[in-house]
Length: 450
Ligand code: HEC
Image 1: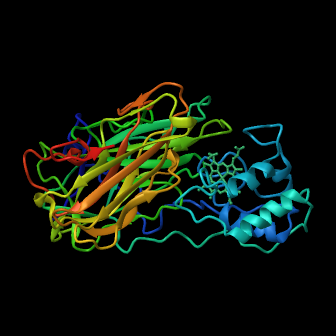
Image 2: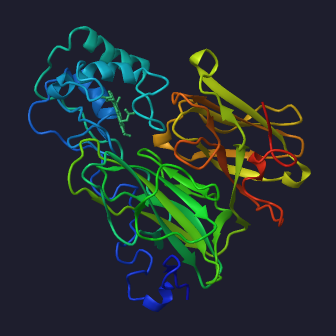
Image 3: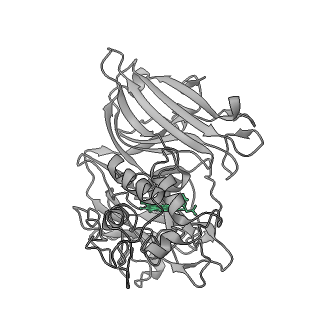
């Protein structure tokens, strides 16, 4: 029988306390639903809306999954009624919310909605801009615009395991933002592959984004503040932000779970909570549901392209962006590796990142993960599809706008920066000298950067 158990950090091996408390999702009951457990998205509005119906329609379709009443996923304010748009804005009380709405819908650097959500079309952006420019005339009390988008895509498999924290996290009253980490160790008695990862959001008001890492050692299962940084030994497996679909691996591949109780697979979940209006008593116990199966044909693995050695000058050229451009010529040992998902990862001053594969034989360039408007708050995995041949060139570009006033270097702290394009691939590179970070660690294996 396949008996999942979660070992609790360093402390008590869970097998001793198999009373249900650590049965891997048995209490919460992994659901077949999408990432939103509750009624997240499309919270209705009571009372008159007062917006022209074409304006209301754009807000309903593109904004109210987050800017609802109450706001969801850390959005700072509702965009439900004429009064909401007439209110003073949070970032500059001298200006009205609607001025920022008009600005952010057409801001390519900091767009609303945040990626990966689709932007309003040019015509929709113009509808908003024209209405604001015309002095924001009132509309009818009601419009018949649905506030719900289609529900997020569910999983095609049924989750049978879950990464869950030991306890719920409660936002301290005075914290607007908090990064909280907890870890889960996985061991299975029989060879098992994880085939899908599906975040299930418990509190949609404060959960802003989630990053899942695989770590070389156990991490406490009790949620604790951990900062926005990333331990250098953690390897990103999944990124989630509102709008990101669950990750299902291609049918030929899965992530192996350890079968050795002395050496479990260690996961760390880093939660970003946002409580802009600092409401009291907001708690969350979000989890990540997993589907597992008997081992598939290939073992998935993650490697990182990019760079570990760069210095972003305090004042980038002409006060603008500073970029690095790293090229890695695929060695014979990587020939045949198939890449299927990418997670571009920088820290807070990152603005754009892209990785491409240029075939040696002159075929078209293949995208290995591009975020033209990188936003630390909306890290997400992106589907990619490429197979490497010896001699192909994998190029990673990272751009930052240094607003800190000091030089910023590669590192794990929140104030440091990263340029890692975490990339899922198979089959695993099997060499005792290999490390997931090798492609970003510079020559001889890694990229050379300019
Ligand atoms: C996926 C959730 C989400 C969606 C969808 C979304 N927003 Fe936001 N919005 C946020 C978050 C989180 C913030 C705070 C961080 C920031 O400013 O980037 C924000 C901030 C804003 C701000 C800045 C407020 C201020 O005072 O600085 C405006 C304006 C805004 N959103 C407008 C919109 C509009 C208009 C849409 C639809 C076209 C939209 N948003 C869709 C999550 C969302």
